[in-house]
Length: 116
Image 1: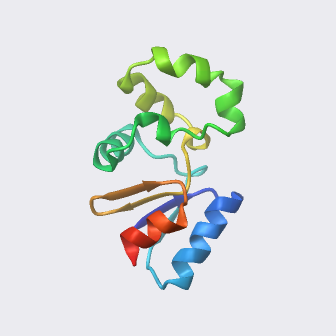
Image 2: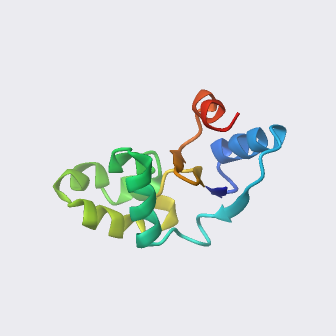
Image 3: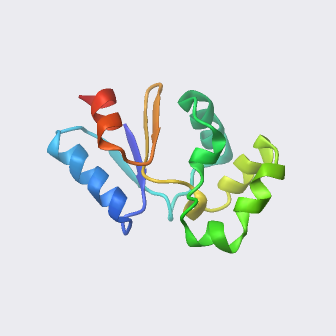
């Protein structure tokens, strides 16, 4: 399992603690130091079945500074994926990839359903 997070993010810290408490093995990846690539994001997006907007960190400073709320609706999926691949701080976290399971954000009930 790949656990992509930002160590200073309190939600990521809660998610990591949850994984540890349930003895779930994972490989941790700091999203700020190793941003997901375009190909990874495209693959995860298709496997997740989620709307692409769910992959954006809409509460993040960079998202707001770039006025993406207004710009995203006019962008193609290709353009949005390429944008996400430019900076890990644009990507919603934590992001967990385990086989065909891709979870974006931490909702304990959803994680319990998938991993317990």
